Length: 256
Image (cartoon, rainbow, N blue to C red; front, top):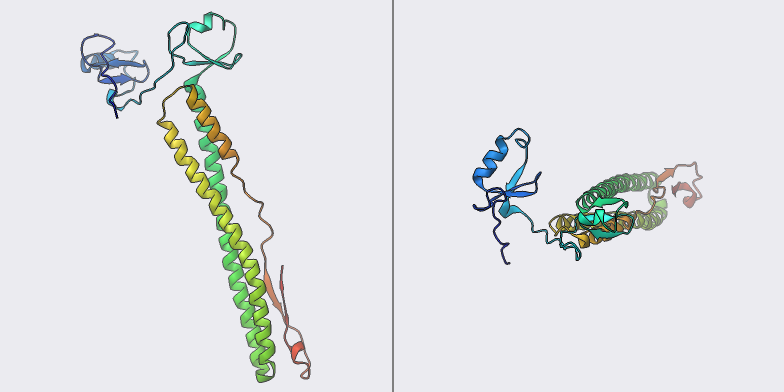
């Protein structure tokens, strides 16, 4: 990848501008940076290496040949600072950098909320699945216990009822697994969009980036959670039976 042209110190105009003042938005050589940091008004200014700067590649105003750093809220157009006193006089404006900052903050907050909700849903589903599995096992144990009490007479009925419990409980567990899969898909989608958000942080700061971040915002809004239904439960109800009615010796279970 081609390297950006070296900057010249914007103070002495002779030495290489190896440092960039984030507050002044100017390049400084080593000596001028030292002087700048010793001055009372600028001693707390933050610097970064010029080599670490991401090229902004800003577009130029066709009329004033200046960088387009503002958005005219009235006209919904990119403008330079000279346009403010020209045909856009009296309009309201926003800095592109402020718009980007707001959009990034909104997207980060939304993503955090979405992923947190996804994690909470996954936890609830997994806990419910564990409880339900334990309940299913308990019901099967109850059925087996009662079947063992009536010994060989009820072996066939016990086997039939266990098979029915497993069949119907599997349907409920399949539903929970599908909900779990959907919730995990939302979480994966959130992580994917989060990576895209980080990639956009390294993108050139211009009007096109605003559109890209707005597109990302729309994708985030599309992350959808299905409302969680009431989770199934299973229980076993014992009942008194007559010896001559084997089938009636077996209690009933309920999944709801």
